[in-house]
Length: 213
Image 1 (tube, one colour):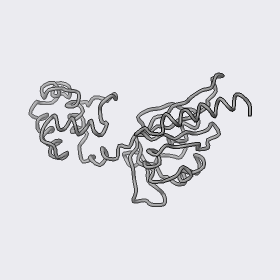
Image 2 (cartoon, one colour):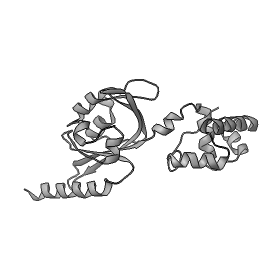
Image 3 (cartoon, helix red, strand yellow):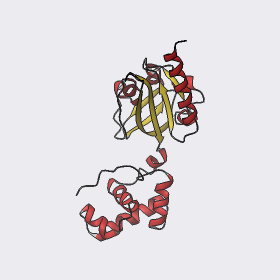
Image 4 (tube, one colour):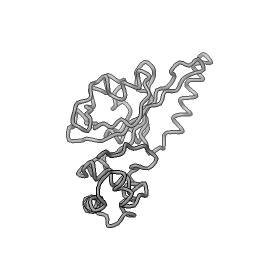
């Protein structure tokens, strides 16, 4: 075994050890598009128990899982996050619905980003797909776009008047939206709404587009 191969295998083993216990799902791919490894979280997010259930490579994965965007448009296979990272693309905050083709009742919502690790020569060595299960957030999809905006700004710590100014609406409108958010999320205060969002990893530590008009 050459030193380069040994180094690559050692780096991958160390990477696997680091990410094995993460709550985020992680899938490692080889530049030849084969699926090398996945942690328990990634398996759970696909409703499978072993790595082979994901498929041996990106093509097999696409046959086992159907992806769609949140607007119900089907994701073309070439645009699957796993295919994009296999091509060496870097991206973040891609939101997709994932459905098992073997059990179409089972659907998850993943927020996906990629990481490309290069070797000492600058060539891709390990391709990493990182996913967060936001199915619970999607299940609160009864919130309107404006209500999500209000919840996000509440989580930023803005008062009603500040939210009204940001969204260019009347303070009473903000209070009405906030009341609907509390009702739909079954919470009773701003602090409870913030805790609800924080427990689901929403809005915190991520950039958000601001609502318009």
